[in-house]
Image (cartoon, rainbow, N blue to C red; front, side, top):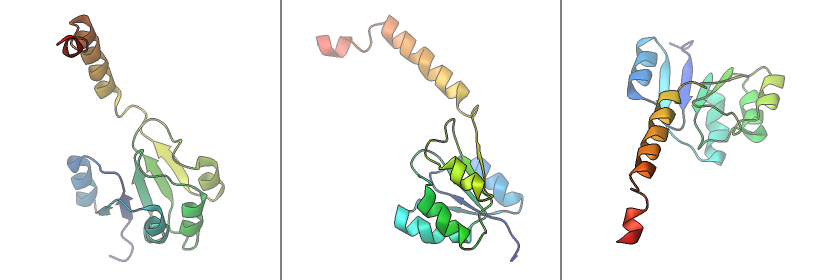
Length: 128
């Protein structure tokens, strides 16, 4: 069990995905840490999965480099502006994202807003 890959999920993830990771033999910890605590915790994980709430900048990466355990940072979503990608990759830490993960949800929301605008749903409460 000492060689088990440890994954930290800081900003939440679908329960089905987490279950599949655990069933595949990964150790998964789901917990959000503030920056100072994350600097220490990052040294204990092989993979970190973040969304937009967690920022992975140089000070956190520097702490991860102390143990050289962190190999992968995954951004659940389109952009990686909350991760210092160049610095991580310069130090052998891969950075990936999931650009198509929310495409359907974004399309559904867009269509919903179009219907709301077409039916004056946003304007009606102001007229009451």
